[in-house]
Image 1 (cartoon, rainbow, N blue to C red):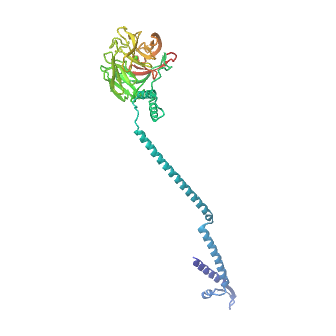
Image 2 (image 1 turned 60 degrees about the vertical axis):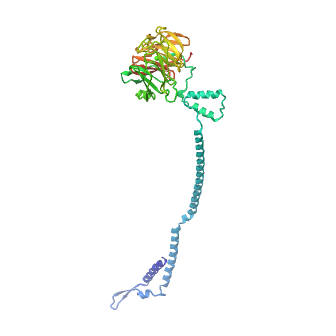
Image 3 (image 1 turned 45 degrees about the vertical axis):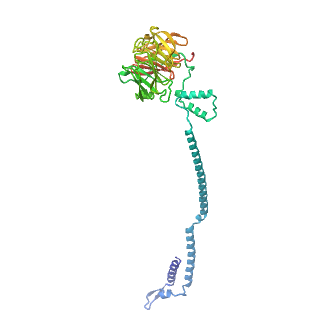
Length: 449
Ligand code: CA
C-alpha cells in the first residue's frame, strides 16, 4: 500500500515540476509581426535526476512523509477507536461480574433442588407409613361417636397418634349429619306460617297428591339433608320412591335414583327420619321402616288398635288414617282408634323398633281436620284442605297433655292440600297441594319448652 502511494505522489510531483518549467514568450519576427513562443521540456529532460527540479521533489517527498504519518494515524484510529480503548476494560469487568453472579445463582438453585428431593422422599415415606397403618372404622358418624365415648370411658391416652386419627375422623363428619340440639331455645310455640313457596308441579295425573320431603337428620354418606324424596301416591300399588340430589334437581324433575319399596304405600302419611323412610303398609295398620342406605326393610310393626283404610281419615279422606310425623323430639304417629272413637291419638314411636313409647288421646276429631303435624312435641292441626285462607286451628301439647284452639293463618293456594309435614331442621312445612309441591316457612317462638 505504501509503495502505491509513494509512486502516485512521485508521478504527481513530476507533473507539477514539468508545469513549473513551461514558458510563454512574445517577440517580433523578422517581418515585424508578433510571435508567441510556448516552450515545455522534453520527456528526457523531465525524467533526468539531479536536475533543477530537485528542491520541489524534496518538498513533495516531505509532504508525502507528512501524509504517510497522517494516514497512519487515521488508520490506527479507525482500527481501535479511542472510546473503545477506554470502555473495553469496563465492559469486560461488567461481563465477568455477571458471569460470577450467574454461577452463584446456579449453585444456590442446585442446592434448593437437592433439598426438595430430600423433602419429597421424606413425604413419600410418611405417606407410605400412613397407608400401611390400620384405619379406624369410618362408616357412620354414630360409630365414630361410639368409639370416641368408649375411649373416653377407658381413659384413653389422647397424646398418642391414634387420638389424632380419631379426632380427624370425628371432624370429617359432615355438618349436615350432625344431630340438632334437642334443648334448643328455638323450640317453642308455633307463631306463624308463611306463604307457600312452589318447588315443583307434577307432570301427570298421578301427581294429584303424594308425599315429598327431606330428611331433617340424615345418616350415612349416600344421602344428605339436601336429598329430596318423593312418592306419587295415586295408584293401587304405590312402591316407587324417587330420590333427587337436591332441590334444584327436584324442581327440574331429574331424579338421581328410584327405589322400589318392599311393601306398597298407603296414602300420604309417610315421613323421613335418620336415613329411613317410615310409612304405613297398604290396607293395614302395619308400620314399616325402610332403610335408605341398605335399601332393605329394617323394621315392621303394627300400630296397636289403629284404624286404617278409611276408618279414621282426615277430612280429605284418601285413606289418611295413619299420619307419621317427625319433630325435634323424635318420631310420632297421628291416628285414631275404636276406643278413642275418632279422636286423634298421638303416639311417640321408637325410631328403631317402631314400638309405641308413649300415647296421648286428644279431643280433636280426626275427620274434622284436614291434616296435622308436630313441632317441639306439640300437635298442630290444619282446619281445611280446600279453603284458600284457612288456619292452624288446634294445638295439643304432649308435655302438659293439654290442648287449645288456635287461629294461625294458613294458605291452601292450590285448594287441595293432601299432605302437610314439618321439617324441624329447616323449620319448614312441606306440603302437596293439588299437583303443587310447596313449602311454608314457619316461625316458632323460643320462650317456652
Ligand atoms: Ca301430616
